[in-house]
Length: 254
Image 1 (cartoon, rainbow, N blue to C red):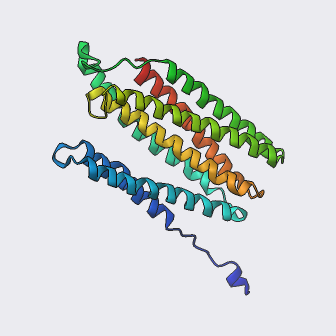
Image 2: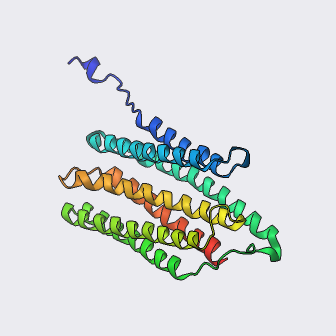
């Protein structure tokens, strides 16, 4: 190989971001439009769009992250540069959702909660808070084990984090099932729409975090670990944890 070829610029490319964007497009704006926009209202098409979008999102996340792990030897740190920008964009989306909720809440006056809304207890969200906070600590412990070169210890604490996150999502499903059986569906009233939109959007972020952990765990079983990816996943997970405090304080308590 000539010196010119050795120093030639090498472009990295991937089609997984396109798959991810397509999945988000089907699962969020298209599915929600068919579900909640009156002129387009069609639950069947909304379910189909969601069924197309969610697998595409998972495929995009798994493939893209897998490429990052396979390219671990050539890491340049761009992941940790781009991650704050991504988190800032997510903060803006959450702020838009919370602002809509605040507008509904503050303009409703004495008519809040809307008539017929069930009382949402604090026991389940309190347990969910303990679980999610604990998962941040367990992941942090795992990162410490990895820095010490204890890959087995890292895997153990990563699995514990995965279990805690899965329990959190299961409790979300349990709560949804309970409320839906009470007849409080997605479009029952203004509060239900805000509740399911905000808690559901947060739950989707938890799911993405769990997918990231699973992607880290599988190659970690053979000691193939990307330290940059582990750090990025940790920052993302702590962000999801912090957002949950806003969800609890605004949606459940206020």
